[in-house]
Image (cartoon, rainbow, N blue to C red; front, side, top):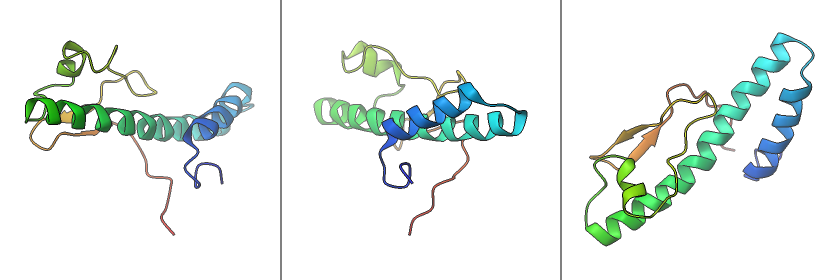
Length: 107
């Protein structure tokens, strides 16, 4: 329910606790999938804001996420929960994750 209400930080903490205390492989995998989705949503929100600031300043999208770091907009480029780089589309200024499942449904 916390995740459904968009309290991503708290949802991440709760799922991390479940992940750390998992008693079997199924519980571990479910927690891992939720953590992957929630971290992506948190990182996407942050990166979307920084991409927007870059576009306002330079009148174009960055050609790669590393330009956000070089422009001083981020200290580090976040990676997904699994340690992978996000996939960035410089034409649209959007990011996607390599392996994210949509758990959350709109009501």
